Amino acid sequence: MNVEDLRTLIAKAEFHKFLKVELASCDADRGRLTLKLPFDSAYTIFADAGTYHGGIVASLVDIAGAMACTLIKGHATPTANLRVDYLKTPARTDLYADGVAQRVGRSIGVADVEVRDADGTIFALGRGTFVTTDPNPPLFADR
Amino acid sequence: MNVEDLRTLIAKAEFHKFLKVELASCDADRGRLTLKLPFDSAYTIFADAGTYHGGIVASLVDIAGAMACTLIKGHATPTANLRVDYLKTPARTDLYADGVAQRVGRSIGVADVEVRDADGTIFALGRGTFVTTDPNPPLFADR
Amino acid sequence: MNVEDLRTLIAKAEFHKFLKVELASCDADRGRLTLKLPFDSAYTIFADAGTYHGGIVASLVDIAGAMACTLIKGHATPTANLRVDYLKTPARTDLYADGVAQRVGRSIGVADVEVRDADGTIFALGRGTFVTTDPNPPLFADR
Amino acid sequence: MNVEDLRTLIAKAEFHKFLKVELASCDADRGRLTLKLPFDSAYTIFADAGTYHGGIVASLVDIAGAMACTLIKGHATPTANLRVDYLKTPARTDLYADGVAQRVGRSIGVADVEVRDADGTIFALGRGTFVTTDPNPPLFADR
Image (cartoon, rainbow over all chains, first blue to last red; front, side, top):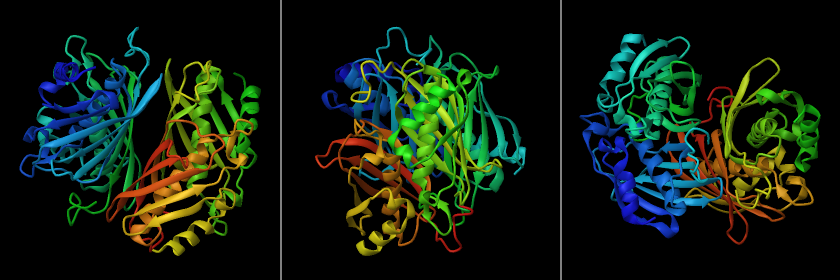
């Protein structure tokens, strides 16, 4: 899967009309990518403080982790589980999510995600398991 | 914290202008509550299939878990970490998130969340750790 | 898989010569089982206080979760990931681990485990993902 | 906390008479350490194949993560929760667990652990939350 395919895949998701996440870079061979989320007060708990809602950070982890596995497999790799450790609350800043596939097997893959700002301050550590079996027949109904 | 206080707290979050999550019921003494999320195609990956984005489900788990601990403590209990297991992808249905505080200590609390439809079909299991120390001074900068 | 097969499987593991975990009961159709671990000071951090080591509790979660999925599938279901929330440190007491398969699909299963004493005091909540694909060819080298 | 204090602390745990884990190195200022576990068939599922039991790997993650936070704080930091992703089953090999404190706050800390062999092959990724509040009064009964 190349960078344009991945960009198209990310752009297609309906929720991403709200969560305007962009593919900043990717390395398909190594299963690495960086997403960028430009700050928008719509993503916050408190608009005045500009502090991000935990659900937005979790969404970034979900997308970056799944896409890291998808890069390697070349097909959809639905999220089986997701874990996010919140280290520090980001406020009024663009976010970057660096995703990397740690291992991609026949049944499942594991990917790590760091959520940070442009300066490298890490706000959250994410990890997830993704289903890597062939999606034909579709996996959504019975993983 | 009573039901009206909790309803007000949930309504205040800026992100919840998009994620129109409502407090369906709560039992403050037991640290239990149910959130309702009416279906909206803006929450989906594929608008035509109506399949929910994983980030929306994770957001529900985050809110329901934090609010379960907040009910017991009477003050904000920021999310330390969040885990979501996706069992089945919900599609075109209102979602309910049942949160329950499993244990609330001096430093941290643990809450469980089930995400289901009105018929009781479970789509995701969530669990999280929440910071329960007094938020004065504010916890956000250094948990 | 019946109760005798499961008992044999548990007894075979080399580590279980030390961790003398016993199958207390099981319901193969529902993917439920209870393990019992009789207290032994060899399982503790501090022998005098009799407080269990976290690794022993994690081991119980691992075994109970994997066995719950194995009951349903009838073959080995290796652990993909494991999560344990420690609510309270058990001391000088026999432990029971109740495992239940929450969902068992073609690729993965999810099981929950509660670790408690005979009176029902819960010490830890566990959850894990288990690989449920057929183990022929063997899964260990490449899940 | 210096290397000798940490070595003493690890040696004191009763369970470690069985799990003969050794402190290979540590950097107290950075909250980093490496544990070594010499292979012993007592740690396996199948003695003939020499494949490690998941509970042994989880125990290493627990110890390395807690000790990384303890290095920074200078006092006990009990495990609040633990997560282990099993990438590959180690067999007949000494194991090393590299623990690093990712963030240590007033209430909780987060540490990462990699379990590998001497050649750097990674078998498991671990992460945990540890209670960092002062242990006087003791935290064990009510975290």
